[in-house]
Length: 464
Image (cartoon, rainbow, N blue to C red; front, top):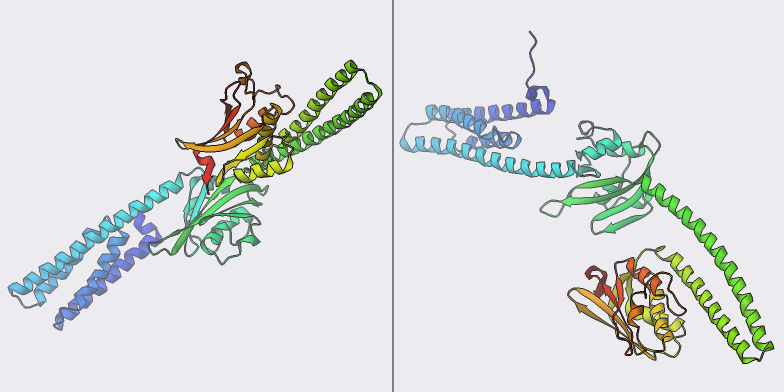
């Protein structure tokens, strides 16, 4: 009849551990018996700690039983071979008790450590991103489900392997990858990853893995970070991998579409600008040829309309470029000063008290400020005051002028698309600010002046 091997005996690692514990126990107990035969009672008993500690660490559930068994095997020959008196008996019992206590303590500590390791393992195992970890020797100690699905390699074939074996499923060769760069700063990461971003200890990069998807390759976004022991020494690292192939394809398609639309809109704007310049030439000639006041008034109205068209062309160009570059921290005072140095404020005096304030905004923030300043000038204001306040965690930036103010019936339509007039651009201003979560509204009073208020969320401003 066939027999089934015990799971311990079928695992070579477990067999090796059992042999080590057995040999250590036999050597320690044999040495102790030999010592007792020669009257040595204070040295060899200490050797018994080794099999107890090893058994408690490797087999925490069985550690106390092993310690009790070893204590019994020690106590019996000690009681038989040592002189019998009350002190000797108490000594033997105390020694055996210490063995059991040490076995229990080691087992409890090992169980606690196993529980912590299991929590870490479960955390990595159920992460949605493909994740693996290595120890200080470069041996794989974690290989979660997501990375199994991505590479097609089960964890049992990868756990315990070293020598850069974890790079083969991605690059079809053994070589250092980002996780090695994070754990060993001496490795030149730039040779494998041309663009690496660092956030503290974490390293991020994007790379093409040619071996994935049956050799079709994949575009990956990866992040790696080392982890430390209590002595702040690096003992391993973990790498998280996300397949962004579809995202890159969509991004590329959108960029191509945007490039084509940009080229088309540029052609249209160029054509409109040429026709507009031609219209200005005719208006100039007409103002020279005619001296009839009604005709000149009519020509002035046409020129105002042409100015509005030119303004719309400029706005359409600015609107096309919104969001094309990443947002950044921008100093408000310097941005306003730069705007004032480039535009004709139309006689309006601007006072700005926004020193040390920075906001996270689209790089086209100067265009938003330009429209606000030009709006005040177009309304007939002679002074514009720019200040900021911090209230309830939010930053309020106020543009307050001394113009005629905004009529109540027009306030609701200020930021609407399609209501732009020459000198405004408030719809564009709102869209620029909205990219980073900044809102804008008007709360002035008609007859006193306009008051535009930008509300910056708590995470969107800082005082330097």
